[in-house]
Length: 162
Image 1 (cartoon, one colour):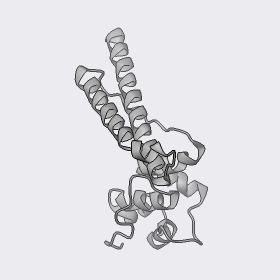
Image 2 (cartoon, helix red, strand yellow; image 1 turned 120 degrees about the vertical axis):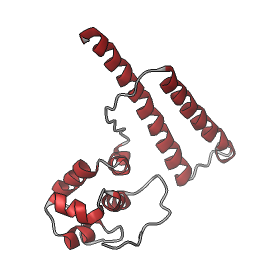
Image 3 (spheres, one colour; image 1 turned 180 degrees about the vertical axis):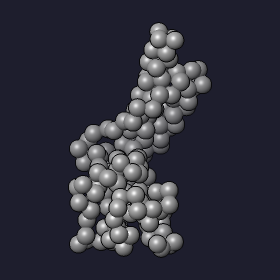
Image 4 (cartoon, helix red, strand yellow; image 1 turned 45 degrees about the vertical axis):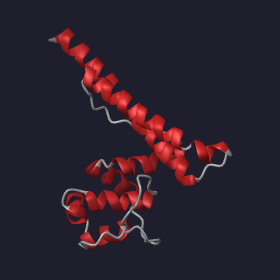
């Protein structure tokens, strides 16, 4: 396995090909371990996950397995972004004052980000990078809010069944 990162400095918004590469590379044990877990030859998986490879793509079943093994949020984002869909992994966050303050801080940071785009939006010209970054931050806020909602429900159910 190459120790050289072939995709340095990639931002938070990745193409599907880049996200597959990152998911495999960042998997605990890397692409070698992922290939072992999936029951594939290491060389075969490396070639299928290479971000510049045009001829070899993972099969739909292999993509499903990569998602299952890695659960990489960047890969989930890349898969669902073209459909305009939001994924959500139900991870309950306790609905405490600290959690609510964390959401408030996240919303404040997102608001500041949107405010910083004022100059770009004042002439009603948005660049692809600005839009993708804005969408990513919005999805992060939605996931955080849903996690707190799940935490509140879990706390309520624990009290009712406790």
